[in-house]
Amino acid sequence: MRGILIAALCCPTLGLAQAANEVGVAVGLGVQSAPSYFGADSNELGPDGSFSLEQLDYNGLSMGGGDAVGFGFGGSLRYIGARKASDYSELEGLNDIDAALELGGGLRFATPGFRAFANLRYGIGGHESLVADFGGDFIQPLSAQWELRAGPRALWGSEDYAQTYFGVTAAEAMNSDFAAYDAGAGLISAGLQASLAYQVTPDWGIVGTIRYDELQGDAADSPIVQNKDQVTAGVVVTRRVSFRF
Image 1 (cartoon, rainbow, N blue to C red):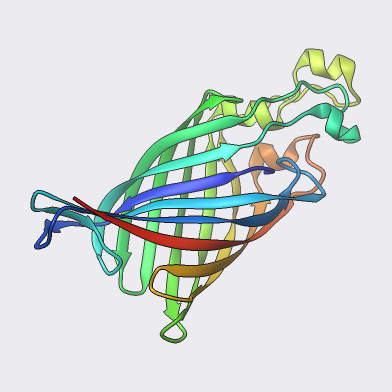
Image 2: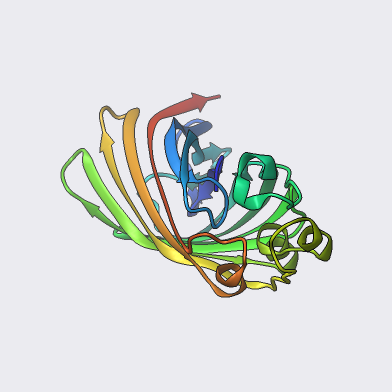
């Protein structure tokens, strides 16, 4: 999971804007500890970041807003860093996998104390296949500045996705200590994520996140996998910016 950067463009609800045209975004930059690759038994430090379109008011149409509730839609992006076999002795003989960028979108549902999402993305680069992720967060304000969020997460991958990161081709089997292995489509991982946010000012904040995923199905059974239990933790500093036009 090294080098993963996830961004969501969230537009929870639609309504009529009463102010001038405005775009509000939130960007974050920080550091994370993540598994060196999918199924690794070690973690590595790397950059972490986030980007979200929080509000769009244009010609009377309003999308988003921090307190918006109901059904909506949004974009979804995920970056997966390259996997080089030469960097890990246990992967000797396997082919390198280029970095991948996944692009797509999905549905959102929001209430004052709960957020849920379902995204579908297509990969470019390291894999050219479909993935989908699902999840939700129960939201508990702890004070005017502190907020706790926690909820389930799940990732589904198509056959090409599973084979790219968890399969072993016949040629790779000849060049490595692994037996040939075909990974099929299905649930890749399931787990939980929790985050604690501190709003320093209306525009600046700090968010700490920890996530646990357990590999599932063919992914968990892959001979490449050193550890089915995957833990990612990170801290980002966030900044909200609004543009009026």
